[in-house]
Every structure is written in structure tokens, then in C-alpha cells.
Image (tube, rainbow, N blue to C red; front, side):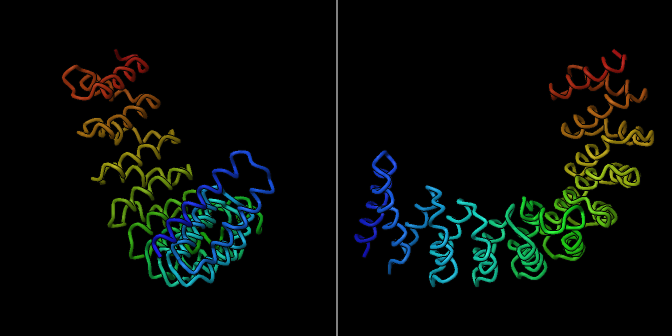
Length: 327
């Protein structure tokens, strides 16, 4: 059996290297038919090898056969190989098979199906992804479904048009942000809500950036809030700078405030110039360059001295001083 497998794989590789090296189209077509036929081989390892090869060459004519394999093959590895090939080929023709794969008994296949639908889903696909995001027992599947809802592509943009097309997805994502037990799923929901920027999302994101127990979720929520560029978010972002301890959250909060000209951001920003984190300092100095608070000059001079460890931060402080006329 193993010898038969290796011979099959060798022949498939040989066939396609030869066929695509310049022999006539009729030869390539005949040999492609043989490779597609291998998707029905009794040996699952041969089916896997054939599916992977068809994915390698992005053979769109093999999509129906790969879809059939994904839906009907009784071997998990073969179904996963078919799904991998289809995702590489990236053909909307495969959407019905992806929908069925979202119900597969194997969580890896459900997750891969959710990933593959990114940029391809239509109205039915959106409903299926929302269902998977809300109900699938695997957090990996829920996370992938959430992320795919953030990249609808042309098919997703054509369902109802405008912001309205995202209302049902927005409501489900907010539910996940508030209630999902997995911090990775909540963080994914926050990121996607920042892409969608729906009218109902800002409040829950502001709550999450200060109240969620996980720093990764808070960081994702802060980044998402910044994308709204809403003046009502300035005060909550300032509070993050005053009370947050996590470096990633603080860095994202400073970045999120770049759109604002509110004078209230000066004090917490200058306070961040005492931070021991190079990342926080660099971002704080970068924003100080724009708003130019006079009270920052002395701190910038101290940072720009040669005894400060990070050369990049020292140079950034010197640059800010020159722009502020404090050098």
C-alpha cells in the first residue's frame, strides 16, 4: 500500500511538471483528468496528495470535484485537504461546500471553512458565519467566523448595500464582545467592529476597553474605538491613559487619540513621558510633536540626553524639541 502511494504521488508530480513545462494542451488536459480521478482513489493518502497538487496549481476546473470530496469523503484528512485546495483556488463556486463544511464534525474543518469564506461570503454565507460565531463549541471556529465577517469582499457588499448590510453582523459581534467566554473571540469581535464602525458599536467598545478583564481585548477595543474618530470617545481614552497598566493598551490609546485636537489630552500625554516603556514613549513623543504642549519641553530635554538607553527614543525626543522650538 505504501509503495502504491509513493508511486501515485511521484507520477502526479511528474505528470504535472511535464505537462506544464510546455507539452501540448491536450496532454495537460488528459493528465489533469487523471489527477482529478485520483480524488476518488480508495487510498485516502492518494486523495490527499491529489487534492494538494490541484491546490498547488490552482486548478479551477477541479473545483466541483474538490467540493464533492469536501462534502462526501469519509476521511477527515481528505476533507481537510480538499478544503485547503479550495481555499487556495479561492473560487466563489465553492461557497455551498463551505456552508456544509461549517457543520462538519471536525473543528479543524469548520474553522478552515470559516477562514475560507473570508472575502467570499454572500447573504447565506453571512448568516452561516454569524451562526458559527455565536454557537460553535470551538473558540477557534468562533474566532475565525468573526474575523471572516470583517472581510466581506464583493459578494458581501452586494447583499443589501451601505451600512445596512452589516447591521445583523454588528449586533451579533456586539453580543460576542460582551458575552463570549474566550478572550481571543472577544478580541476578534472588537477588531471587526472597528472595521464595520456601525452606529451601535462605539458604546460597547468603550465599555470593553476599560472593563474587560483581558488586556488583549482591551487593546483591540481601544484600537477599534480610535477608528471611529468620535469626539465622545476622547474622555474615555484619556481615562485609559490615566488608569491602564498594560503597555499594549496604552500604546493603542495614544494612537487612537491622534485624530483629536481636544486640549484635555495634553496632561495625560505629558504624564506618559515619564513611562519606562520605549514603545509608550515613542508614541507619546510622536503625538506631542503635533499638539506641542509647552509643559512637555523639559521632559523631552531629559529624554534626549545621551544617558537615556534607547537611541531611537532619544532621537525622537530631539526631533520633537526642534519642531516645538525648545532646543
